[in-house]
Length: 224
Image (tube, rainbow, N blue to C red; front, side, top):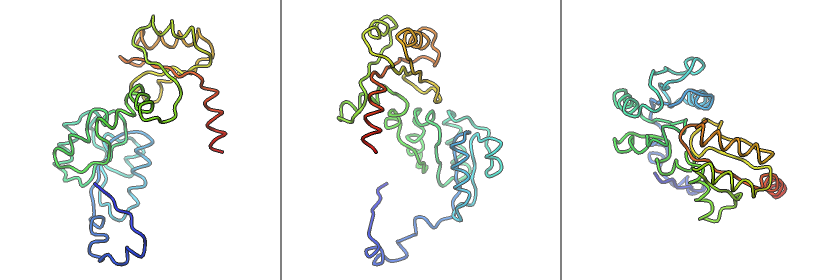
């Protein structure tokens, strides 16, 4: 969908019938997720006079005060798609990263269902930290130096050459918990071992950022 931004003088020349037609329909919405992010979305959406009904899958106790919760898991793509069709949902809004990484937006669009969320390929920026870093390096977007490993011995050897502190991250979705800031080499090696050997955050590679403190100082000063 493309959007055109026009100045107020230009807007006055657009017939009213075309100006707000797309957004004047009373809509039924489906919000996917069960966290605070989705609660905030539902809370704000419920204030719109253009919204007649909000469903949330799976939702939570707080969300249930504002929307009808549906017992569907966020990774149940066929179930969510069937629900949207059966209940004539006008727009689905996706909160969590997991269904986006599984391609829910792609599947909904194939079925001609409106959905707000990036495609599976675009969602890789969030679901794969190594992919995001490679993208930033390729497109010359300023970012800290990093390395990605899927073998413990290679990671441990590289860590012995690094200055501390260092950040170790799991290369995948870890629900916001896959980040460990290490002050010493021993701490970093233990963090890497917990990810690659013990699979603390599931089956994923790990990647590391060096020069954390220096980067933070430079960027904070530059932004001020």
